[in-house]
Image (cartoon, rainbow, N blue to C red; front, side, top):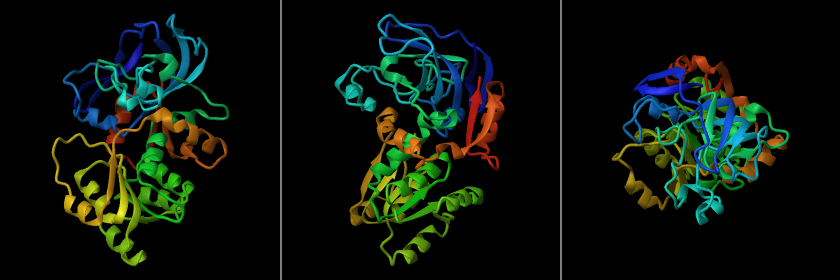
Length: 345
């Protein structure tokens, strides 16, 4: 099959890989209809990997059609259209059965496309372990663009907002306005926020946030504007969706006393400077970590079906998989007009 492979930093290539096959009785094989490039894929693109290997297929956001099932698969069959949530679990331990795959008790790679241990989805096909658990039948009334956003980006935005304790009437700050940050803006309003401040360096992204009803700010004056607008109280809830040391520090700076700060931007640094004194003095609640994607579907799917969330509006580019290397270069450069890139095998 054709696939995108990580070769070296900033070197992703379109080429041939072995076809996916059933390796365990609970596996399924899925023919990919669409796959997404996520901001966290750029960490791998830059060479920031968990394991020192190369030549693996990258990507962890996909929808497609089941083409083969292992003999122990009972819920799915060939021909079923499915979502492939980015987070992976064994599907059998107490934590997976409770929906929290990130606490999976067994030795399962927690996400696709991080290494050769579990190949990614930016390909014509992929193997899904524990298919009955790790693949979700396509919900009714969901478009392909909405579905691909459900595999990671929208659940992560929602998870970030939930972890920030956004409450009706609250003041919220969102730091970073990529597709996840912009969906967090929309989610914050759905959760009842009265005021949402949206912060990013890129004017075009700030304009999108403003169109959603947010007060759009550059990072250089965000703290002063929010302080003046809230009579010094600052934000009740802050969602950080970048993952840089400076944006995490800004998120803490924007938080008021006893506020909640939710960090969903990926940061793989082993050490970094952190404004602990401000966290301690202001009594902040700080949460971080990866999103258990499928656990969010119970809330998100009805909100999309009801027209209250519109994740498809942030899809800006749909390209053939064969142009994947160029797509990564454009995405990495934050090319004007580009938010979410979708690849079609």
